[in-house]
Length: 121
Image 1 (cartoon, rainbow, N blue to C red):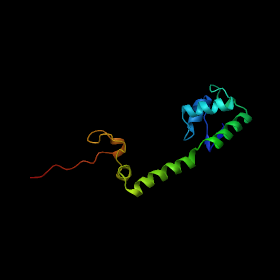
Image 2 (image 1 turned 30 degrees about the vertical axis):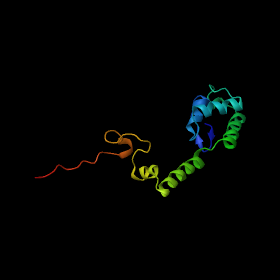
Image 3 (image 1 turned 180 degrees about the vertical axis):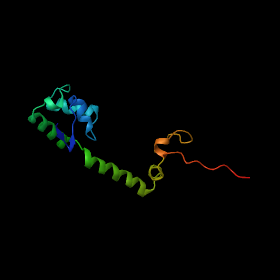
Image 4 (image 1 turned 135 degrees about the vertical axis):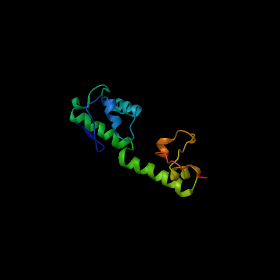
């Protein structure tokens, strides 16, 4: 099992296995395969250690991934909350940030329903 950027990659096609690294999607994975001249359809376990080292070097040099990317995203969100802009307030309240409706739906962001008791006479 190959280990790149602190992630154990599964035995899948290279273009799919690279997407297990935070910050690398399908397009980036294909670009990395093209830069390293590795066939995207080849399974990770069949790659030589030299090929894995080449993948590791390209990812370290040209992409921000895993911990550094996560911390940058968290810092960006924190700065939005600190300046008190609309997006920061939505993050702080745990509501959808990008203009989605919240009267119905938005359960993923809002969490489990909080039932309000009926009005007593």
